[in-house]
Image 1 (tube, rainbow, N blue to C red):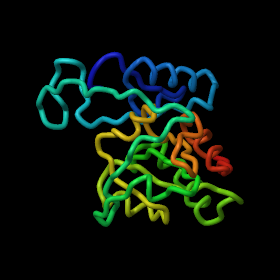
Image 2: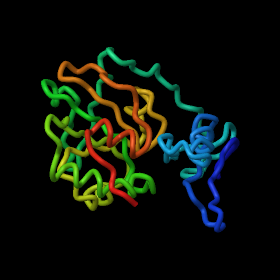
Image 3: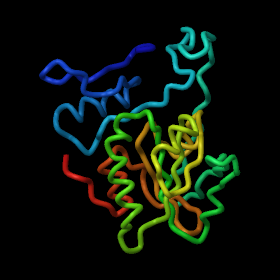
Length: 206
């Protein structure tokens, strides 16, 4: 843990049942998950340069000011401009998907919750439902880790999670739909069940 407030879920058998989460919103989601509201699956919160105020960053040892959080785009508003490098180093933007409904999926290959739903995403790619949206994966992590997922959809890298914050996402996995005109057309979906529902997919039984 890198600061307070933060929390982790411990299973009845004494094993760790979640990633460490920080902040009131994530802790509330973790509590909701623990008491049975499974649609609010706890998120893996981005940890790049994350630390309690005034404490050194665990990654680089420096003290960073908290990054400003932009006002999140709302349903019906134009989606924020997203221009990020893909795994080949080419710049990809949301405008490249204009004319088609697009599911923007915020991801991290090191996130345990993402790993759990990866088979569902790959199955969805292989056999998408009728009228399924295009998929744009906005991910953290290394090129190698993202290539190892073997996704066929476009994957772009955003180590700062700026694109996620711009639409109101607070961790991974989460997603939002952007319509053919480039406007936000859904609330941010939290956790695997919500993301798969936006995609029109069905979650694999555990």
